[in-house]
Length: 226
Image 1 (tube, rainbow, N blue to C red):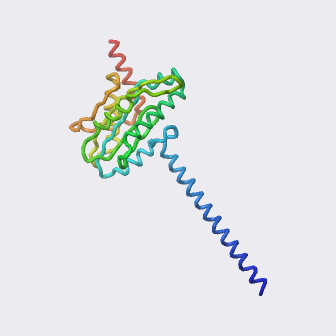
Image 2: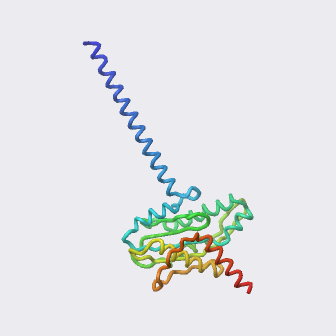
Image 3: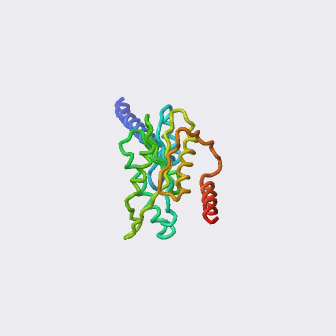
């Protein structure tokens, strides 16, 4: 009987250790899962939302109107070509910081990098404020950015803005903002165009936007040459 009394606390201790170990394993798995989810929706360079993160944020706008802005940087490639990719990355990180700061404190707003030098800002809004949001992007880029020791550059952006009403097709809203930014790009960049609310949203073209931009740039160059 005495041996049994001694054994019971030992069994209890082993059981407790097992429960603690199982809890730690579960917590570790949850942490890894949360990290994986964040990685899947976050741009690794800038820490902004990526395309998937933007989609998730826009899902939260379901049933609400919102402002959306697409900013396509002007003159980013020469920075990479002249001072290297590290300088280009440094430029993108600083731009991301400035854009995120411009929406700091705005509930449910999101800033995303879609890849390359294209950024998107979206914010729930019951009244049309897309033009002001686009103007804020231009203001954020006004100050020079140091991309290497002793080297500072100023970049501009072709900005397209739209106020989307509740229920509008998200892809068509994005296409409208992209078309507006595209119009600025064709004019030489460094400006803002807002989609006219009286104009129907464009149909979604499945062709890659980059390819479309290349074709339009070529068309513009041919028109200038003529």
